[in-house]
Amino acid sequence: MAGIFEDTADLNELAEALRSGDAGERRVAILDLADSGLPEAIPLLASALSDDDAGIRLQAATALGSFDGVEAADALTRALTDTDPGVAQAAAESLAELKDPASADVILPFVEHPSAFVKEAALRALKELRRPEALKPALGALRDDDPRVRVHAVGVIGFLKLEESVPALRSAASDSDATVRRAAINALAFSQAPASADVIARALNDPEWPVREVAAESLGRSPGGAAAKDALVARLEDEFWQVRLKAIRSLAALKIRSSALAIAPSLKHSQPNLRKEAAAALGELRASEAKAFLEEAADDIDADVRKNVRWALGRLD
Image (cartoon, rainbow, N blue to C red; front, top):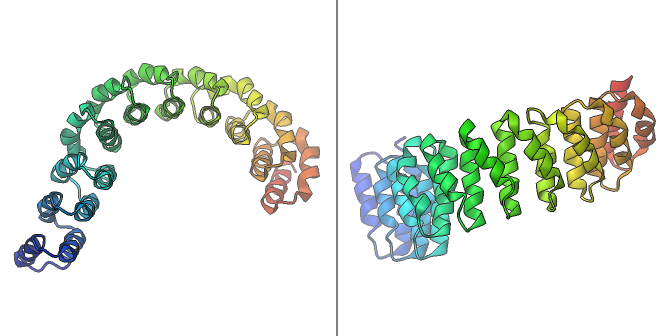
């Protein structure tokens, strides 16, 4: 795409504009370089990351998110240590947009950077690149003191879907931090490892409801999830309706017909989202034994609940 660029003279003009004493002119030059989409714009944008004006550096870091490849990755990783937090954050967000696997070669060393922020940003970028070489540094990052680093390490490991990484994910499911445990449970389900359902099922009793919620959801898409049907049914009494909803959804996905009468009382819950999910699940299960509950819910005050109830009753008929 040539865009505004007709020849190299245009690039030279923008390079000159980046050296202007007028910050506004430098900003316009960065926007034009970003719009060009030309690889030749990358070194010019990288040079703008050394501008005295933090606003210019931030704009350059954001603009580099429109490009890909090792050169862009190199510039952005260096910008992670910018003295201005806004610039560093923009660089981290642009790094996460990279799609060229070759970029990982530049990013990998930053997983061992002294700064937790830099490590977190590097791991976040590596997750999408899915390079097997990222497994070893990610496993090391699971021992980091900062839970945010451990969360993103779990993300890298989970996305790789390597059988040898499953023990590390199972261990992370018992992390002292709830956000790490939640990420690990989600990663175990994503990996589709057959031996993970037991760990996910144990998380249904986690003291933190967001962990129980992701466990209830994950069992519905986990090999062997049906073995945890009793534990899922028990979560239908959870104090948080969000956990109940995900348990209902998984019981329906796993076709646990015997759970129908345990799901039916949720048709009377005060939360309409839960009532809607219960009606849909009973229809999915073709639960004729719950027909009376559905008929009673046919006049629900919520239109979406009534719609799902009608659909469910139609499935029974």
